[in-house]
Each structure stands twice: as structure tokens, then as C-alpha cells.
Image (cartoon, rainbow, N blue to C red; front, top):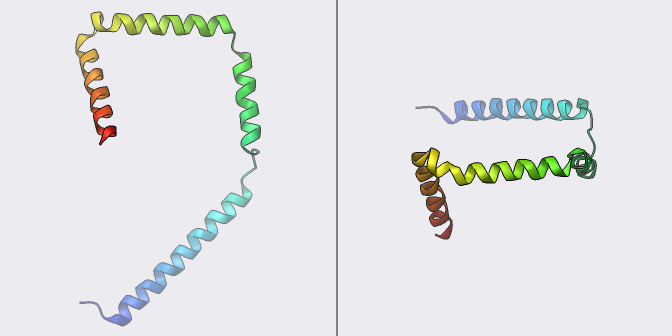
Length: 95
């Protein structure tokens, strides 16, 4: 069984290691370039969405919907598993 002095020595060592790790994280964060705030990222997202052609987006959406409709015919087991997952999720969220 460890003595009180051994436990206190180990505690001091762990505190020292924690302080070193926190200092390393602070210096890494200070050295990292600042990419801007959330507003700048929102601007980049708006720019990216502006680059997407609306007709391409509508075509992709129509293709996704048609494949989702045909999924039960091509992969009935996958469709059943997905339905069970959704029902389980909904039941889990209601509790």
C-alpha cells in the first residue's frame, strides 16, 4: 500500500505534467495562424454556395429522391435495417 508521502509526490508530478501540457497547448494555439472568426467562415460558406449552379443542385436532389424511392426494390434488407434504425432512434429520443 502506498504511503501518503508517495501519493503526494505522485500528485505533484502529475500536476507538473499537466502544467507542462497546458503550456504546450497554449504555445501551439498562439503559434497557429488565425483563420478568422465565425463570420469569415460563414462568408466562405456563402461564397461556396454561390458557386453551385441551381440547376445542378436541383438535378442532384431529383437523383437522390429517385434513388431513395427505388431503394426498397433494389435493397430490401438495407431498407428494413434503415427503417429499424430510424424507429429505434425516434423511440429512444421520446424517452
